[in-house]
Image (cartoon, rainbow, N blue to C red; front, side):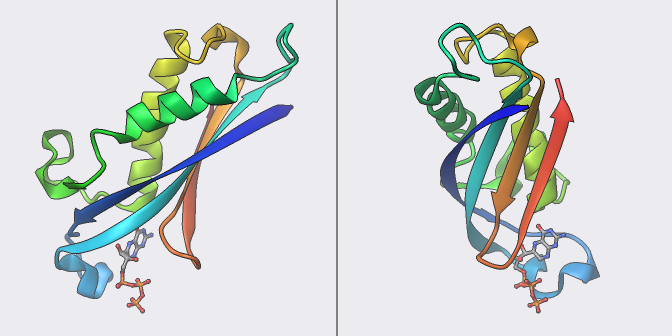
Length: 132
Ligand SMILES: Nc1nc2c(c(=O)[nH]1)N=C([C@H](O)[C@H](O)COP(=O)(O)OP(=O)(O)OP(=O)(O)O)CN2
């Protein structure tokens, strides 16, 4: 498998429901580093998985609606815990749609998988990976 990965980050605020989260039940802020890896079995005729510039643009566009927001106020997330794991899947879904609609500059059907990793701090990260 060939993989190309790009990185961006978002600054958000959110709060969690559930005693397991302790102090994180209160509103708190976080800067998430988001890595998006695009996987293909074969390179395209240009010798790439996807163009890195396209991948960066698509990742930035995907993150834009979340950046500098209180995720508790995002209608689609109402009543949900926007954990690091939850956000990896949300971003994966958005990137999958972008890939399938050709926004990565390569036919989405030629991509094998996407993996989204979010580092929530220097000691913890979560990821979601699935075949397209
Ligand atoms: N599985 C997950 N666990 C936790 C997440 C998460 O997204 N997925 N998020 C948080 C908090 O948002 C953030 O980490 C701060 O939490 P906090 O309680 O302040 O810190 P820690 O849990 O890292 O450490 P403590 O020793 O419990 O303070 C929490 N968990």
